[in-house]
Length: 99
Image: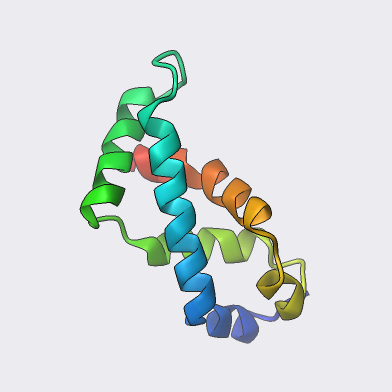
């Protein structure tokens, strides 16, 4: 399990920052073409547009990803697959789309 200090260090890890940023762009691109029947679709579109404009605070998404995976060690978090990271970001989009 990662300690709070280790999570703080991971928050500033350049590779984690880059990977979460890319995952946000991938999520935003998927939202562009999702069905209008998806819950919160209109709000998600606004979030996606903000991602492409560069006005989304990726640092907030990094925190969600890190605390959601705090049960893992630092090495496990750093070694997470892109798919696992993408799932964590995708699962957090609605939190930011409505707030």
